[in-house]
Length: 166
View 1 (cartoon, one colour):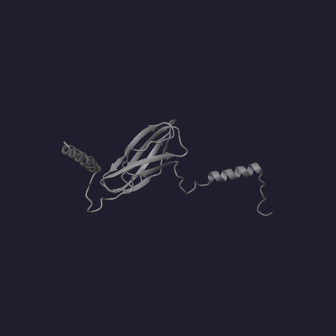
View 2 (cartoon, one colour):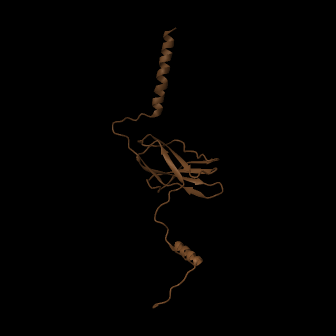
């Protein structure tokens, strides 16, 4: 045979060669989703009254740890982060954030970071969302004002009926 003789590789040598080829291969070019997923409750909404809650789920569930939720002023989890809430927990039920109200229209994002009890962290994927501006011609009417009317009007009617019955 011209140019050399064939090389015989036994079973072990073949597996070793296959392993070396695998190790030398570049990493896959796709993103693996984080086992820490989040969901925003309260969307869609518009400024200046946009109350939101962020929730997190860890798959598979963990037994305790600490969760921290961050809000970013951009849609890609960059810029100066604002810590919304940090909560330790036990068991597999991860606490949600309290209600956080965004008052300015724009593009934002949430991200959660889970801290394992034994050390180490896991970060969720970035969760972008948009807070719309208040539609033109719609007056601001905070929920607090509506609650006052819902309580005050029946109370006044009750009191006036009571006076009339005397």
